[in-house]
Picture (cartoon, helix red, strand yellow):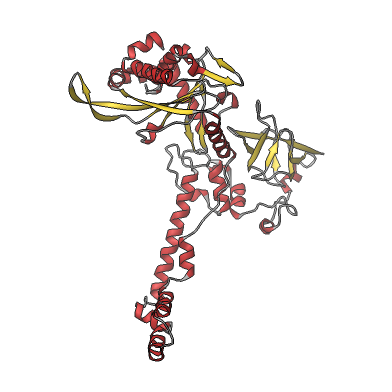
Length: 468
């Protein structure tokens, strides 16, 4: 009996996904609950599992195909189990060159066959985390054995950048080997020898006597003789095409929509971080021992933003047609960078949470984001967003709105700078902050006052207990 494997429900308002990876091939046995495929939606990855024991009889949708909710992904043959399933033949390597329509069971590249046939343990990185979907996709396209790729991530996960760096190193090694082999076969001739070999010397002498060639023609002939071989020129101008993930396409679309829809403007200020750094220095060890989490900047900034939003509620609003929906709850989005792109999980009811609760929730959300374990519910419904480019060394930037929100706060690197305090030039740890806002909803005066309030709360952390 053959059973259809269909695209499951992907969450509210999500109706389409992309097949990121197949974990099983045609002819392979599968147990109930085993992961068959991995789907990539606009925001999260979804695993498709088998509802029955059986054998993968047919793969209908292949990696890179777009699929809708309810569409057939594959078919399982539940009649073939036990010994028959074990004996089911796997596709031959030669089938990989067949077309997708004629041989749907054939994996298209040697890299995919190696990835599918390798035991699960061998596909894990040193940190026991599997490579990212985009890393696997690039590795399959270029026949890269992921066990040979070293991870630069502290968690041991192989990312897209690791695979690209490995490919570049392999290319450089090949070029060096080719150059050394060529030098051993034949010494590099001098320009005069190259010219003579191309007939330039004789040609120049002959044309000089006959007057048949111009100086420009002789120069062009000499330049052609000295030109590097076409193969070397082509090798140095190599290009590659990488299919964008659904998440990256969605990020691009949303950012352009924000630019085209909102009347976006950015205002700046700077914060003296001395008080916050002093609080962290006094309580860092005790905080870590008592709660098992470090006391970072994000809890201070979240509390400061909540305090400022209470004073300027239009920055915690959303424009819907001809109506402005002002929200009196504070769900703060925290931008997190992952291998597959930026995601913004939401800290719900941030005004009701303590510093400890905020730090723990942000750490948990960030960890789940980087391991592709976020749900759509984690990403929906934010009222205001905070993004921190300072962790990458950014000194100043203009963040783009996370629509339909009307405000986003950008944090940056803390840097010691000379400032004037009470008529004296002193060195203080300073941070530039940026507020991007929708000018259709928020006036300039209100935006500037909001950012000043954030600055005041951060420079006097005790006030956060009263207003945050």
